[in-house]
Each structure stands twice: as C-alpha cells, then as structure tokens.
Length: 113
Picture 1 (cartoon, rainbow, N blue to C red):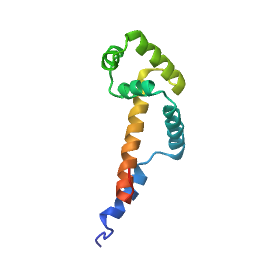
Picture 2 (picture 1 turned 120 degrees about the vertical axis):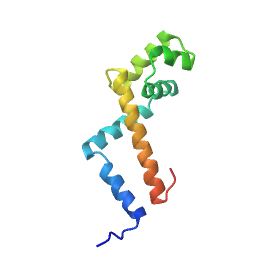
Picture 3 (picture 1 turned 30 degrees about the horizontal axis):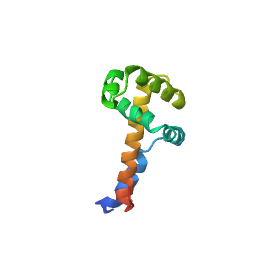
C-alpha cells in the first residue's frame, strides 16, 4: 500500500525525530540563556569562535588588541562555564544548528521565524 500522507505533514514528524534527548535539550536551553547574557562584544567573539578563528584573527577582524581578545575570551568562557575556545565553538555550532532547525520548523508549521 502506498504512503498517502502529504509531505508537508511528514516534515514536522521528521524534525521531532531529529531533536535531542530531553535532558540534552534542557542543557542546551540553559546554555542559550547564558549566551543571551553575554555582552554584545562577547557575543561577537563567541560567534567568531564558531568560525574557528585564532585570537589574532579575531583581534584583526574586530580591531582589538590581542590581549583584549584574550581577556574577553577568558571572561566569556567563565560566564559560560567552559574550559576552552573549542568548547565554545562546539556550543556555538549546536546553537546555530538548533536555530536553523527552529526556523525550518516554523516555516513548515506556517509561523514566522
């Protein structure tokens, strides 16, 4: 027998299947709240971590001294409870992916992103 469910009804189910376990989702929600508390400049650095930039590349991009980038990095990592820039980059990538999934879900469900 052929599957007759319209494709637009299958997509939300597929998105739900892709979502993380509830405990991981709760942890991610807490991290989103912590990231939201970053200053605008810390958020700039956080976003650049996800691009894999070195401190010098971040300094050049944001017109900051290398020491200023190091200081912002230390403060940012402490605020997020992370140990290194790699952890921050992974977190940034996860949050970015979650945002993209949310936008896809909103578009499929007829809401605004």
